[in-house]
Length: 100
Image 1 (cartoon, rainbow, N blue to C red):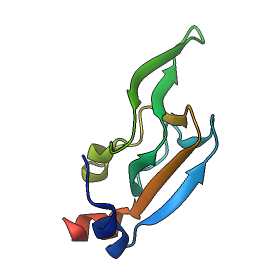
Image 2 (cartoon, rainbow, N blue to C red):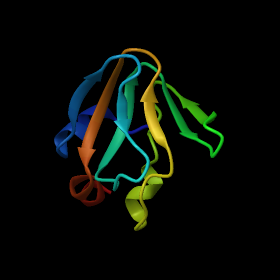
Image 3 (cartoon, rainbow, N blue to C red):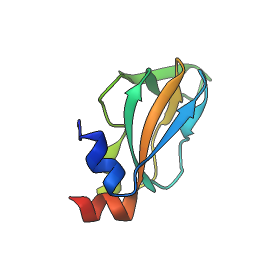
């Protein structure tokens, strides 16, 4: 989902920078924000019972990160981990919903 950055900013969005290998969020956290990648790359992953990393997807500039979970009462089933230095627009859930 690509939303204009000025629109997101007008609704409480703020820019955050992450180094490579930083977590944006982790499994079992409650979704509290909308995240849109301004630059960089993110992977969605989890570790299975054998301890192996399973990658669900790779996301890049202009894509949003697990936004559907803002509309249901469920925790994140994956981690969002940067795989390069990233800039992310972050909008609190209430402001994002109001914007829509």
